[in-house]
Image (cartoon, rainbow, N blue to C red; front, side, top):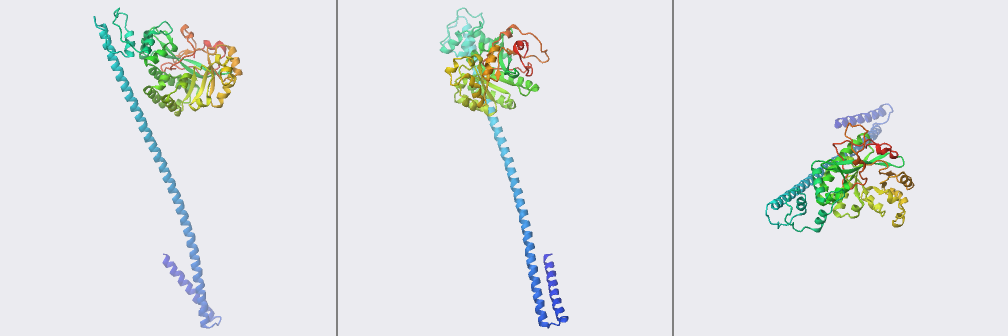
Length: 480
């Protein structure tokens, strides 16, 4: 097509030049030679004009094609980048799935190993019991493990009056067996009660509110652990936590605690998205790799609740963190969980270090904040502590507040949150559908405020009422 048009244009130019020469020769009377020269000159100019116009037209066409090619190349580059991003995301998901599966496999292997150890321990204990109950049996020569010693001490009262002497046990175990906890129960009775309570799911939680000052509006709840014995009598946490840690049961308690705290928090957030729950975690749980792996898997599954679920540790726990505990704490912080420190015994606090580890709350007894001797023993005056912690994103909570006078003094210290019997004691969870009114049993009224160990929350029981304003002693008549 291009060749035919070119030939046609050439023929036209020749005809135009010949016509011009012919007109000059016949009309103007110019000689044939001069007319031919003029015709050739005109033909030359026509050829040059056609060549230049074609060159300009080709240049514009080439420029358009180059621009189209550039746009196509840019689109191709964007598509390649998009495919690369999707491929990277798929590889990340595959790597994450492999890591999760590996962690779960390790957790299952740890549980199987722990179960095998418990079975071997149970077999040794049964063997020792049979030897001791056999008439005229000699004293056992094999060395008893601490768990076997505790199980033997918990035998019924129909055992022989004069059993053969037990082998020597470590001093720490003997001291734990001899020492009797408060409440009139010895070590073995409390251990048996604790195990039965765990097996029969008789570990309950009470909720104690934390209110804003001076508005006294409920902002958080602390889950306080209570244990019910066979007669449904409540046992405070400070009576069994040390025994649970010594016997290795604290991990099971903390797992139950976290489960119930999450269940209660979900129900609380149906009414108010701004509410939070403080859940106590024992130091031994943080340092036990098997128990912590179970807790971490559960918290990972409930990662969406991380902004509202605050894990609480003792001040002594943070001061004695080892490499394993530090790594486990960092794993929780990476998943968005915040920490709180309670059982504060002094005001020697490093807020920058605590903030870097994920601490966002510090609970200090009101008596410690208002003690004038703290100004001379600590690096900062108690009245400036709230402002110092606030610079690093840490909120100060004054706990164990029991009088209005303490509230007035704490307001001068710019304390934003308060907790104590003045606002409300720990209250049991109300069953779903129960009325909001109701008295408080004497046992509940005598519950102590500062609960250590594992805060728990029960999914079988109902949650506390939504945040509201609590004024004076009127909170004592209100169920949580």
